[in-house]
Image 1 (cartoon, rainbow, N blue to C red):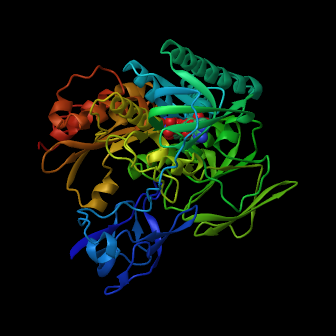
Image 2 (spheres, rainbow, N blue to C red):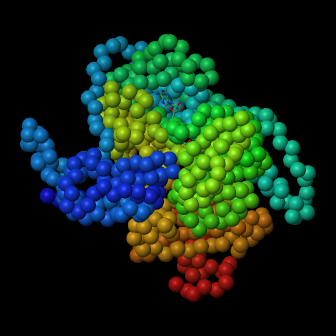
Image 3 (cartoon, rainbow, N blue to C red):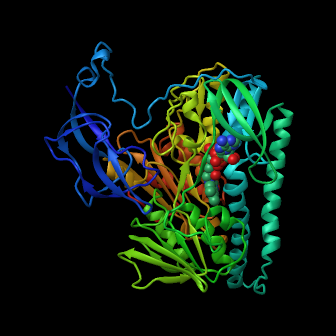
Length: 592
Ligand code: FAD
């Protein structure tokens, strides 16, 4: 018998989720898959099942607590593998670690048909993870192909995500910047916004980037097979060829044989079942189409995607409401940084409804009527001209015939991988959004490179210490590594230093001194383990903190590095000087 902590598994990136039911007590016997607790997010309630069978020895949570991925729910005295296993398997060695959760390995299908082509590596999905993996495999000398249903490479990020949103955000930021100039004596008339031209600009940006990718694929001799791919065996993929601008199937099929496959099929928008179909109700893709600028817009979900799109629409003239079930916007980012962003953005919002959820949405002729429930819920349904549903994304693991290849997919559609990005089938890898949070392009690319190197026979591992997050709002909010909230929650002993941009010559000269740069150090070792920046261009600067964490730097390493003056980036050096007690750009500090 051994004591094992039962922890919260991947819950789609949600943090500090409410526990609304606890189904176990000390002394209970639980079987694998028995519900331990029930969580409620702004999207849904979800049961957290036991991954290990045994007797509950300690319950560490109660109703009303908040919990995140990795949080300990209970301690169980596990039944041994021998006791659990059916008789015929009794001789099998006891596992040393609890069995992997939900995902059960299926038996691969036996495919005996002929293949139209054969590759060393076939990548399913041409998003940032997929094309990076295929290009890297080709650079290693492997014969590689990408199977992608749409006409262009780039996936969500390039076509309906990172890049189009930034093209619009850039224009919005310039409009806002020009307004600030009035206070400095430079006045422009109110901007005239031609929404068709603006949309055209965004589309041109996408076309330039996707065109570039097509050229790079050609230069590397990476074949692009356009169609919907489905595994039909452990070494075969069947592709229903597609045509036109979307993913309409032409009726033709191709069968592709592969030595290695990399699954990079990404994620899709999560649809809430109670929300009707109506052109005034959009997801992020619909919002990027920029069909009209509403007078009054509701954002359901106060995460990065919703707030970025909200920034664009607000600058174009919309008044915003946002509803978020958690107690703060931009969950995951440092609260002190978000507070600064929120103060600067108050003017965009009529109502920020925290601790509140959307319970009904009705499309009427004169608008979309939304009913809320929770501490900030208006008593009556509220009318909106547009509703943006930005309630998260779901992985595509269950839509690719993974079971035919013997690849295990979790109940929610994620594919579990090891540090080499291998699935349970050793020659099939998975990368990007489909393997879990954070769902970010830079994580997908990094994972793609690791998978490609392994396909080429090298021993590569995903061992990044940290993955940064950025909200490209105005001001931007960027964070990496341990946050103060996480340190508190996980009992990590930290010290922190903050450099306020009010003391940065460059920020003051730019008329944008509201920002701040924060560094977080491990109290015992002095090494930097986290950092956050709020301010203009924060996303461009967070890379230095990522590097410092990866290199195990302490405050002196950063503070004694000469940063160019006057730059916003020198705020990182100065925050490190604050940690050392030697910052001469602030009032005197007590020397440390
Ligand atoms: P995807 O980009 O989802 O690509 C998967 C590809 O696989 C798609 O092209 C799809 O068509 C194809 N595919 C799927 N199934 C099949 C099949 N069966 N057959 C053929 N093809 C298939 N991330 C950031 O890092 N920074 C940002 O600023 C940022 N902004 C975002 C803004 C928005 C509005 C959105 C929605 C997302 C944003 N993201 C951002 C997230 C980012 O887009 C994703 O993390 C990233 O695209 C994931 O890459 P991927 O390669 O895993 O998959």
